[in-house]
Image (cartoon, rainbow, N blue to C red; front, side, top):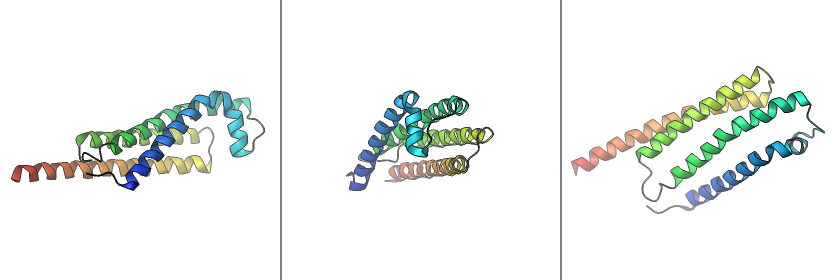
Length: 152
């Protein structure tokens, strides 16, 4: 199966997201005040907020990078056929990671609640449900394909 322009573009966008994500994660401990100034216009973060937000962002960054890597690995199966059990397992892992991220964001609401935190939590829940649904669909497609291969 030939890789389409869309899947190539998506693959390059995911590689770019991975590179930017790794750079931001690695530089976060040194550049948090600068990032806060750029994004929020804050002059400096209070020590209490900085002490909370740094571990929170580092904890959230790792699953987010893992999600990007899983998506890159799934896209690499397109030329040979995406209906493989590895993609089903990857989608289940993605769904689990998205629910974990949702739980982390909901837990953050008990300490520092913002509209964006609630929005992210609910988006992660919805994305996790989508990943589980898509995994079940691909699993069923694999079953149908295997039955069809046995029939012929």
